[in-house]
Length: 176
Image 1 (cartoon, rainbow, N blue to C red):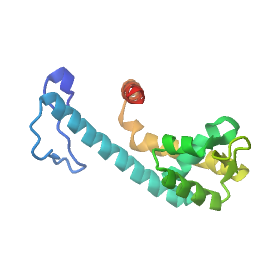
Image 2: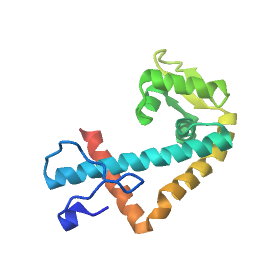
Image 3: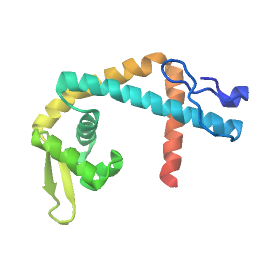
Image 4: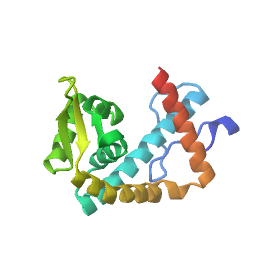
């Protein structure tokens, strides 16, 4: 993709066949077109990587990326547990969506729910011993899959720059 800021021209978003994806009826500025094309490419890249991870995780572990992400977040959390509301925000799921996800993983014995003793309104999702074993298997698969379908196409300096840019955007969104 061409860099809008350095060349002054808008990049062209394309699908995996190399065909331009038009923004029908769009007549904004070159910068707006560039950011729109960037967004289209970001969605395409994340959708493609997600689909490939889904295939790999389903084949090797019978799991979905969302299930593995839940386990990984719980593995990194203090006491290997998080409030359901925090899981919902972290995974960008509705309350009912996170409930279904946690229920699905709990049925497999990977996660357990626990009420907070001091506040009955609070429910925790906690990682079980079996969940720790599965996340130890799954995390390297996810890392290898992301590297294979994303990381290997970029030099380390490009990865660092992209990561820094995305972190900057995320930090700004948290302040909004």
